Structures are given as C-alpha cells and as structure tokens.
View: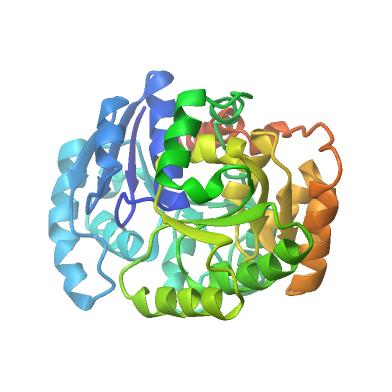
Length: 369
C-alpha cells in the first residue's frame, strides 16, 4: 500500500511527531510511506526511518496557497497513492481541490484526522469531506458529531498512540544526568516538576507558575521546569511569563528550558509532570508519554488529557482551573509512592497503526467492490 500523508510542516508539535512515528510504522510493515509538508527539523528523522518527503508550501493560511492546487494534482498523478491522509485544514483544501480535478478512476481514497476542535465554519468543514474521518479522542468525536454533518459510518475514534517502549527505560543514564546538572546546576539536589508544551497562553504556563508558588512554599526542594520552544509571535508572552516568575518569587525555583530533544530522559528525571491547558486539548500526548515513563501526572479534568488519566492514573485528575487544588494534588503525589501505572492498548502506537490500517483497508476494499 502506498500512503501519502500531508500536513503543514514537520517541526516539534504532537501532530508532526505523530506523523513521523506513524510513517515509520508503515515502513516497518512493508508499506510505502510518503509525506508532503513545508519541511522542518523532523524531515531528517522521517527519511532516516525509510519514508520519502516532498517539500511543498502547503502551510500558509492564505489565499496564495491555492496556487498549490495544480502542483498537488500533478503530484497525485505522478505518485499514484492508494491513500491520502490529510492532517490539517489548509493542506486538506489544497488536496481536495486537486483530487476533485482527477478522473474518478484515478482518485485515491482520502482520510482526514481531526487533531483538534476546529472552529465551526466553512474553512474547517473541509476536514469532514474526506471519505473517512478519524477523531483522536472521544471528546473530539463528540465535537465532530455536534458541529459537522458526519454520519457514524464515516467516523472512527483512534487514540493517538505513543511508542510506549521508548519511554520505559526505567533508569536514567548517569552521564546524561551529569551533563544536565552541568548545564543547569540549579537542578542539583532538587525534585523536578515538569511542565511540557510549547510556549503558548492556552497551554497553561501562567497557571503552572501559580501552582509552583504554592508547591515550593511547602516543598522547597522542588524545582519547576518548563520544557517547550517559543513559537513565532509568542515572544511577548514569554516576556510575560518571565515577569510573572519574578513577581511570584520563583526566579530561583523555575527554569525555562526551551525546546529539548531528550524528552524521554526528562520524563524519567522528573518527580511529577503537569498538564494545565486552559481549554480542552484533543489528546494529551505528553500525559501518555510521562505515564509510560512511570512518572505521575496531575492534569485538569478536561479534554483528551483527562480521558488518558481516567484510564491510566485517575489519582492525578483535578478540578479545571483550580491552581490551589492542583498544587494540593501535586504535593499529595510527591509525598506518596507512585502506584504501578498501566497504559491500555488503545493508547499505544501499535494499536493506532493497526486501527488506521484497518480503516485504509476497508476504504480500498469498498473502492474495489
């Protein structure tokens, strides 16, 4: 089977990482994997794992992007994929308009994944035009059925899978830990409380600082780390975070680490991981990764992150937006041994891959019938 995935770019987000991981799984199973995007740091990993990448500027949310319709149509004609899997709205528009111009006998099947609760408007409705739609969580499925005209037969929930084994090393490398403490000497002798996620207001970094003020007051041996890059246009918010850190007296107790490539080690090194998004996230990838590492997680009881915690670690659920209760839950978990954490099969990468391939197979079988 030849599978073509299309998304805006290959930087560091959950959609991008998930696309690269899924592409690698396709190759392992003997399928041909191709990805179209505007490029990014993850292209090297994608290609090293056996997939092909084609750089096309499908990332701009601008009418100028519709100039890519004809080039995309030519690519579809040349590549002749069996399945086209679109993972974002602008690439979906370009792909659908290109696909519609092909002879019906030469059209691949089209699958879309709703990676989020997209705004309800004609622009977002393109994601519902695919032959089949995948929702990454139950809350996303419910959102789709409430807001878009999608019949049950065209919609499947497939949780975003995590390569659990890559987060189950169980023991930190001593050399890695020594290098981390050389780079960040303020970490020595501290229990790390990690807040993973790109710097963005809705990710909850301000709320994390408020909770850390309470945690450090009662447990001075704790040190907060915010792990995630500053996206273009978010510099002012980063300055606001630094100002809040000063105002709350956390300059010596919270470190902004920026984007990191050693997340598996950081999960293991952390005593606790926090998820504090201020609006429902479609899927809490960092929650699953942390729990797979055996690290407890505290999260607001909303969205896809809560679905994961309810299934894996309900002890970490907290009333949404209540930072005082969040700090209390964190302190409670820090003071008690972490119970064994089991990751159900549906949250694993292998299960996601098999379920997605089953969708592809059904569509292709129906096309041949």
